[in-house]
Image 1: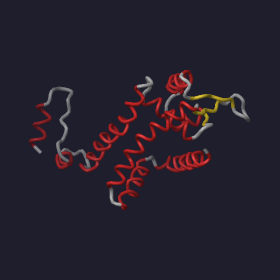
Image 2 (image 1 turned 90 degrees about the vertical axis):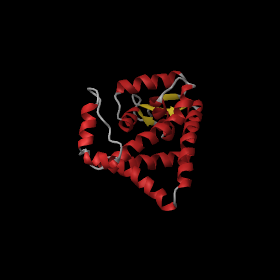
Image 3 (image 1 turned 180 degrees about the vertical axis):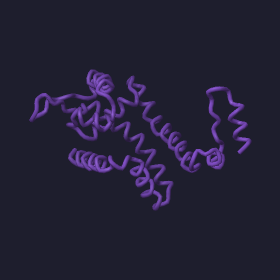
Image 4 (image 1 turned 60 degrees about the horizontal axis):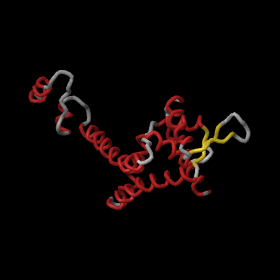
Length: 188
């Protein structure tokens, strides 16, 4: 423990010393070292997972926010702006900037609601649906490759783990979203 304290003291001001192992993390009082390693693995996995799509998005001048909007609009055509805000948990201002770019570039279209004409329903254009499918294909290929490398029992565990990462109060809403997206995909 004295080595870790000395290491922290010798760091320049404002720079925290990172434990090198789960054991150092546990000794440092960071809680469960295994959890810290999972956090880091999650960051690295996410970096590589989104990196595949990022490279394709660069060709269009789009970023990750555009990808998320396009993904959910494509998965649930006719999604309301309010529902999209709820899914993404971003501000209207953030969504408006990204959505405006997608609308102007012809990747998404907004239609008036059938019941309430003030409501705006979002749909992918053919160009938007193609890009969304291309992005999903890149990321799905990564998942398929990884799942093929895992033993069958671990495949279900991966899905359960990711679902368990969702706040418990949100799980039913996510389950309902997945059901709607699956139904929308089956209808097309």
